[in-house]
Image (cartoon, rainbow, N blue to C red; front, top):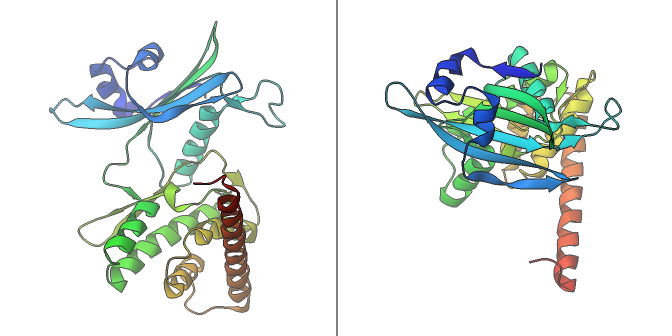
Length: 275
């Protein structure tokens, strides 16, 4: 699919005169992330607000790139635009019923300057990254156990569903997990940055990779919460021999990696190459 327009957004884009490639490409908006320059091309993200018919506003994240692609064995010479890969991943996740971003618009064009691509997604209104939320708890005090575990259960369920569909995220870090805590106590969880996702037929391989990625950056959680999260992911109340092996493997690898990382940081400080 080389062009996509979400029907739920057609009228909104049209009323804002942004319902075609050229209009979105030429839209002037401040960069949300500074453009990434690579191999003669660039890729950047802007946040833009649109007017709704009732006078309210909504926001989109508008990603634009030119001559910025990823090479693979399928595309070893020209590569494939990174946003094309991301769009296809988003659609696959949604087809599997896995909560992620809502795509609004995607298209690619060939111009005299090269290959261009646009990907627009709806802003995750009311959602906060796991990284920011946990840091807030560390700074201001963690909520009661029931709230924490509702939160962990939502994230564990999200990851479990991904793996049940054979999807390995590959970068399942707290900054890529977004949650919204509703007044009724329910927690919604969504995952972003899907570009490096891959299909894995063996769930244990996905678990070792994605749980390791998450746990390695979450060692400041209490061990009790980490273990509770792990059991919620597996859907068990007591550790089985397999679960014990997997838990020890992930914990040991995470601790070892962090020790190595801290050692490298200390060496860098000693020779003056780190802040």
